[in-house]
Image (cartoon, rainbow over all chains, first blue to last red; front, side, top):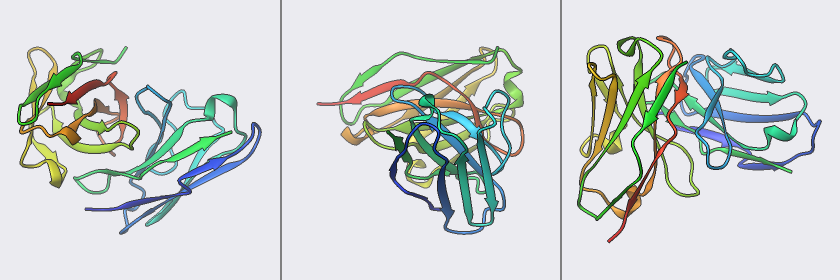
Length: 106
Length: 120
């Protein structure tokens, strides 16, 4: 199975900050990398698919980059509603897998 | 609009089975796969498997291959996930999710989650 390692596991930031979260795959996954945001008590929400594509309705302050084994999610200017937990997910293998998550808090 | 509506909370004893349903609406059911993802209390997301609503083909995470069965009923546009031989550590919120698009795979639409509690 492909292992996904996220860092950091948590971070503290302020409104307006630029925030970057990284995700590393245990083997090359091309650009088959998705990012999700989850708020407490809610289902996850897809933020980025195929490493850098935004689904309709996702604000442009979210961006993704990377290929192969190293990926990043960047929030250009953190907003109050962005305080949440973020997960990466690989979809290269028929057995998908998530990273452990990064909690973004004040 | 696209919706996935899951069945209600369940309480089971260790060793029992549970079957969670996920009723889809707002799209052609057979055009997209359905994934199941679980989240234990205070823990991260765990992908369990995927079923093609087109032909019923399944892919399971290795750790669930022996205890989980995913099925669909195209007549009612409903996906099901059954977990057998439940253990206390199967206590979690179970989510169904639909592929955003046919390829590449990503979980673009989610159900509201079903809490399954396993306790003696």
